[in-house]
Image 1 (cartoon, rainbow, N blue to C red):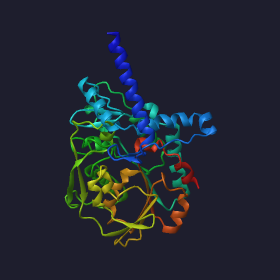
Image 2 (tube, rainbow, N blue to C red):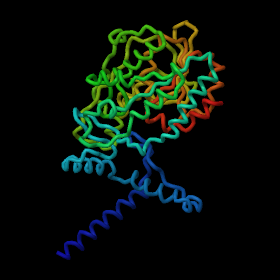
Image 3 (spheres, rainbow, N blue to C red):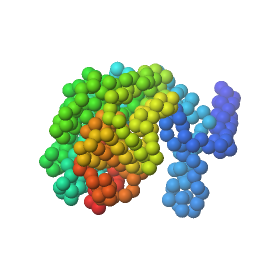
Length: 372
């Protein structure tokens, strides 16, 4: 028995050494298409990085990300967890009706920053009284489909976030779509393997927006939504690569306003059909996220909408192309300027801040951009 233990230890040590060496000497991968994310590259060995602990942390991530059999190990780990009934698969709960949910806890919400961003929108509203300002916070699928969560699975307190927005925002700013989403939860409002809403979810939000803005909305059928993919495995599937996951359906609205789209001064398509052959089929909406996207439509009503957003807006904004002459989309992950220059340049008449509710609490640049 002792001999077997020794042989097993030698085998394990040899395997670990071999894979570590392979990790170091095999050319690094820039991105994992399966996991749909950038991979950690070789960390820089400097005195400063070592003294701050950055090198050690980056090295651990690097060895993990560049591990030669990484994707196979993720699949194996998920298979084992499934066999033992573990519903938390690498940061995604496996729920009922084939839904996966991002694991978001109270500790993941920066409530101070959330409050600061709410206050910043009030400041923005008061600074530009001539502009009609609104905030829309998209609920997470785990909030709307609570009944599908694993029994006893902890999630963040969504109620407090919406209470703060309702209580602290100036009158008329907050467009609360949470009740609408909850009352229609029997419909396909969120992808099952991705954290985004589906085109039906975006459409319900569009109807709420139109109601607040005095716009006559088109019916769902009038938009002529068409299924363009039935094999989408999204961001939550990328966490665990679960072999038992069921694919999602991606739909796009065919009957929208004609327009020209410029992203970072380069002409693009509103629907990038080439992305249907990629892992992240949600990128079909605009092809990616950009610092600044300018949409010019054939609507001649003199209205310009500034949308300060995350990726939830990408499937929402196309539905407004018959209601505004121009739509400017800003993603602060990449856009570094203040909003004041945009407002003057494009003669903005309306502004919509549109974020996933938990993403809103993580915005570090919003307060400064609103106040300057």
